[in-house]
Image (cartoon, rainbow, N blue to C red; front, side, top):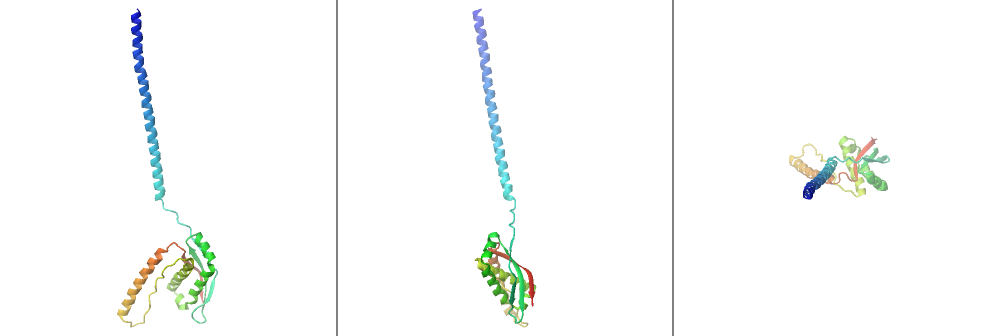
Length: 205
């Protein structure tokens, strides 16, 4: 009887050992699954963050809001005797910081603009082309006061009828060369200083 009881206890002990081993195995597998799930979640989070950053970088940047600095009207005698020009304008500048610089240097800027205007004849500024050229000259004068330099694009010279073709061809070649240099110079300062000049009133008398 004692031997039979001992064998029964031994059998129970043998059955208990595998159960404990199975329990540990299940626990280990569960931990591995949890770790893998956590790693997968972290990877997904990081990837979604990268995608968000990429999409943010791919989005076009908002353009800076244009700043306009209004100048008091100019009344100047033109190069033609007895003719004068009354003009009001606004300077379009790159940013608010440049607008503050314009205010500080306003006397120098106005002086440069006055010199440009007073050197013009009525016929030079009466046409649309003449006004466009005048805008460029004013922009050039204002930017010089701000320390921003660029070359003015040249105007094509006019020649009297009967001018030899060789002279015209040479003048055209020189004009093209100077025009290309001016375009390159203007491109370098695009977005700096005074970027445009807008006439709000233009009266020649």
